Length: 237
Image 1 (cartoon, rainbow, N blue to C red):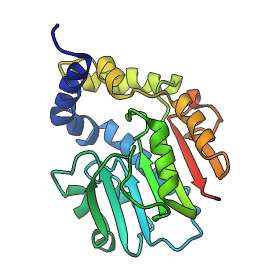
Image 2 (image 1 turned 90 degrees about the vertical axis):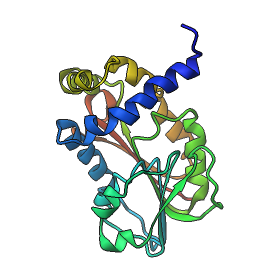
Image 3 (image 1 turned 45 degrees about the vertical axis):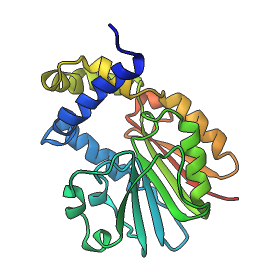
Image 4 (image 1 turned 135 degrees about the vertical axis):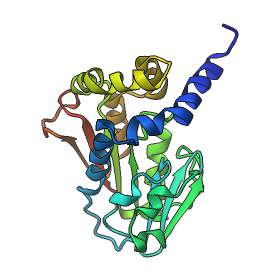
């Protein structure tokens, strides 16, 4: 094998996202129901007291979360991702008022090109387990959020016990039919950060803020026994 580690990772993940990702998660499957559940969970815990003028969504992909947005900012809803979307499918499925303020921007969540205190709300679904430097993402999210503003991250509980049971019972079977690569290999390359470590980073970065971590669907305070960890922060200083 003459490829470097970086080339191997890129080769496998580029093929996954180009040929398998959409079919696996969004094409009339149980996985599509799971993604819908994740997206809805982001909207349930908003406690923002400021008037929402600008919102930033990190790792927005093709705008999959847009149809689930409940509160529409007055001026701008910024969707930021490493790659600009090829389609406006999800934008067309969202509210008319939201479509008027959505702006897709190419950028890196680890190094945001926005001024400090720019947004009343910053959100992300299923982002932190992918990024190379989750600490940088959390620090940057806090920096660009206004004092009194809200930050919400939804994190899959990978590699929690319940998470792994669901994967082996349902997800891996479907993924094996769609890809020539083993599901375990794809996720080993793609989900590089452990939920337990991510939650510890959240506790550190937001230690001086109002921080709430809850778990879904069973509300037991254990990521091993749930599918989602939801982090909600009100920035205090």
